[in-house]
Length: 107
Ligand code: FES
Image 1: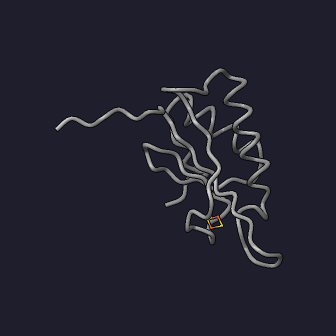
Image 2: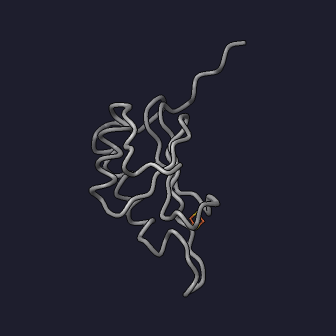
């Protein structure tokens, strides 16, 4: 059986969930700002669009204790991150060159 090609080469979901004050969630770590940074970077590199890379905001992805988290499909590789430097590394290494960033990867 053949498998249909993915619509996007890489589809990235950032948890941007915001909970009530005092409750743990990815947006407490600046997830929305970081997601916007990633989206702008992909666009600036000319990598957004059909067959390329898509950055999406997601609600809770169910891994709150590991947050902030993002997941890259079709590989289903999960990452955590601290800052924009980490996002730069994920973009340059994984999204552009296909090399998983093991230091940021979650099991
Ligand atoms: S709040 Fe981000 S995974 Fe649940």
